[in-house]
Amino acid sequence: MRPPLRIARPVGLATGLTVLAIAVLFFISSKVLQAIGLPYGSPGGSGLTKFHPATYLSLAALAVWVIAIGPGRMLAALAIRRPGILVFAAATVLLAFQTIVVQKLPVSAVVDTFVLPLALFISIAALPAPVMERLNIALHLFFLLNSTIGFAELLTSWRLTPNYEGGVLVYHDWRSTALLGHPLINSLATGVYLLILSGPGGRRFDLSIRAFLLIYSLGALAAFGGRAATVVVLALLAARGALSLAKAVAGRPFRVRNALAVIIVLTLIATLGTLLVQGGILDSFLSRFDDDSGSAATRVAMFHIFDGMALRDIFFAPDLAHVASNQRRLDLAIGIESFVVAFFAYYGIVTTVLFFVGLVFLCAEIIRTVGVPGLLPLAYFFLVSSTSTGIANKTTDMALVMTMILIGLDRRFIPAISAPANGRPAC
View (tube, rainbow, N blue to C red):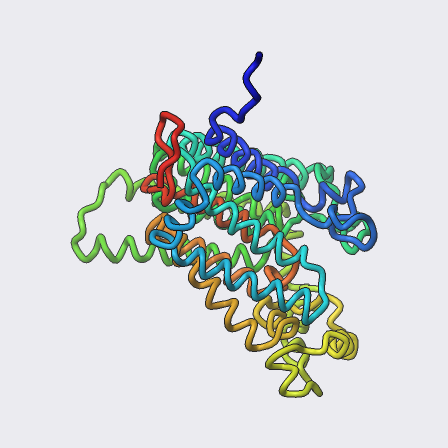
């Protein structure tokens, strides 16, 4: 009689599901889902199609990790070593309650935007070191490919991923969509990658390779056309360079080879930038600073979104019909261009403040995992997101950026929950 079938090596299955969830997160954007006919971001269709495939895979991976490690040991390890994760989980439950019960909004926005990164954080923290090393290499290859596609799209007007706005295919936008689907998401992610590459995450490469990747990715920002992302990342890179220079002037030891490399990179960027501007290649990108299509006016008008609203509603449950009416009255066709303002407008002061506290705890756990170098990419993410509705809408941006930081800065990565090589999970 044959023995009953059993799941062999659940740790291996959990690892495989985690890697697959990461791959789907990076390669299957919301625009791809729309292009293949799934109503992910449009009305109608089954409720199951409103959740990103990476969400399903990350939850499946987390479930297998729980089986492999044991529910009690998993919870104890999180409570002792990663208490911020539990605080963020509680804040997410509160937000989901406010969304479903109080505001009668679809829960898919909360699940894809916040449950997905929560599940991925725990799963990535459980990955063995060799897998993290391969994912680190894959991250650099992904952005090399993504930038190359961005350049090709800019020069040929061909689009790998069709760009949909409100369910309608957009033809007039010159910005590249590449693998991540939307120009602004590409800009955001490329900026995070530049901060990882210019910090400890790029030290694995020879200086010539690192310099090439930096210049190549900086050039890709022009192809993606994100103004806020470009300005903020250039400011942060300049601040990082100025800080390094100040340390050298103060007497901290430095390598002459490194200093020469920085000078060469800056010279190449200035030279190439001048040639591109004179050649007219950057005209479309630079024109976005002259004509923002009403974006700046929207950021001023959005603060009147609460006009005429009762104080009790502002604190506990804003009237969404009143918010929509104010949007129409103020002609906010672009939307509420700040996730902070949008959160207060959708969920009220009490829920928003409590949830933001949980979000701070999640960020603290990310910093505890990767160290101080994670501060700059996280700060960049929230600064750029503050110029759009961002995480107040349904998006996988937060999961994408968090995954990049955990993988890209893994040289000092110490798993909070790990499994030994023999396949027996341990906390």
